[in-house]
Amino acid sequence: MRILANITRSIGQLLARILCAAAALLFMQIPIYIEQYTDILVEARDEARPVFEATQRLAFQNNFSPEAYLDAMDGEVANQDSLQLVKNTLMRFREYDENIEIISQAPLWKKPIVFMQHSEKSIREAMEFVPSINTDVESLLYGLMGILLCSFVLYLLAWPIRRARKNRSPK
Image (cartoon, rainbow, N blue to C red; front, side):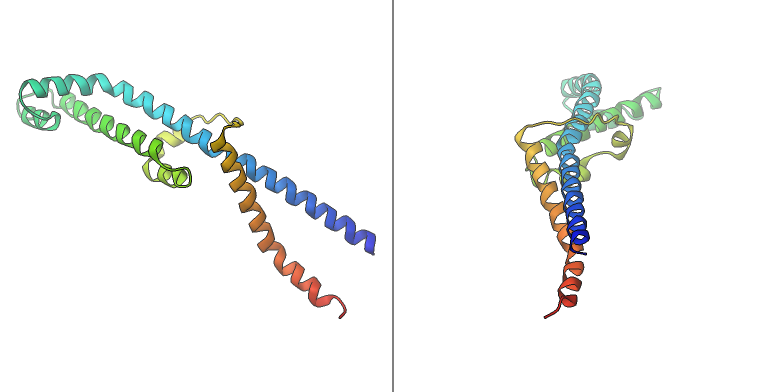
């Protein structure tokens, strides 16, 4: 009976270590995912930059802000679809630029939360994530957080079992 208990305990400890290692690997992907998303966001912003800069240049020549310039042109432009496209591109450029800044400036412990608040679902869904293992400080810290979280959850799950064993053992 004692041998069976030792084998069961050993298997449980092995599974706990495997789960903690998996949690560490999973958590190490967080900064990689955020970095890949930010790269895509930078590319999208750079695609919108020429339209933004051209609109800004025309607006400043006429002593307007880009938005005020486009609003002033609203009734004058024959192709309203084109004007709406420029307005949307201007809005996207500013939004992407702001989101890139906010995500990159977020502190390590807040970065995943800030990322979820300021990332676009459509870009996240279209993104083709390529997992990898980085050994930079940020990834290692996230891996450590994964180990700690997994250990805590396993401790909470095992607590009723330990308590039941303690109550069954002869006094």
